Length: 282
Image (cartoon, rainbow, N blue to C red; front, side, top):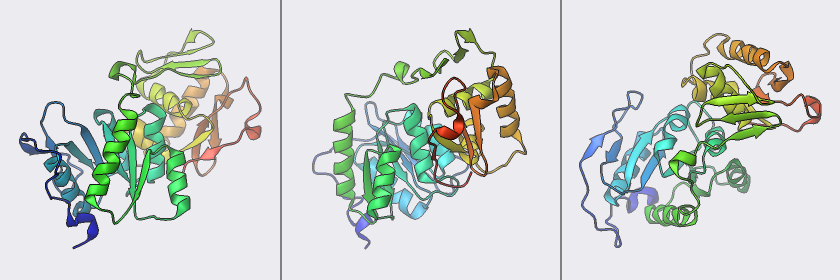
């Protein structure tokens, strides 16, 4: 039996709990059932894995060890569902978005602990993932007890540092631009901008990752919750409208063939600013 699953369903010597009912998560995009445990006080884990042969035994093993667990099969689902989790197990090989993009997207708006899981075992892959915001990196195939130990270690380090839910939507400032996701307000030089919901979400996404090029597909996943449909020129139309409301086109910089990044007309010219492009197709 593969080492990754050999001890997956073995009982833990330290966790002996009675569990609530295991129920299907019911996500229509998931080809196989994912599961959740209704147990008060349990740590909630989001398992991002598109291969059901890996996801199902992993989720069931975590359930047996007392974790409230739910699954996501795409990067878009992970970007929408991470807010309800206490920890994310993120496979880097996803069908819609590169795992590094997903990691950066979560880290831009949250201090949520992330453990990346991948078959990519090179030092460069590990370094890139840690730089993208993951707290740990685990190479497949791995032992389930090692995974549990790493999860517990990451939670020990981060549990006291995580903000309360009310404070999780931190205010983003970029020059004279100030965005408050909790109040859903954006001001420029103290003047409140009249933005639609999508315009606000798009501006917040760009401003929360300054100097980073956000690929079009990631924008579609996080703002329109759809990483597959090109939706014509929806992104370009909203970018154009936002530029008009910000009063200067250089607030949003187009990187041809990739996507967009936030600019600042009050700072150096855009071509003098280093850009860190997201990994994957835009």
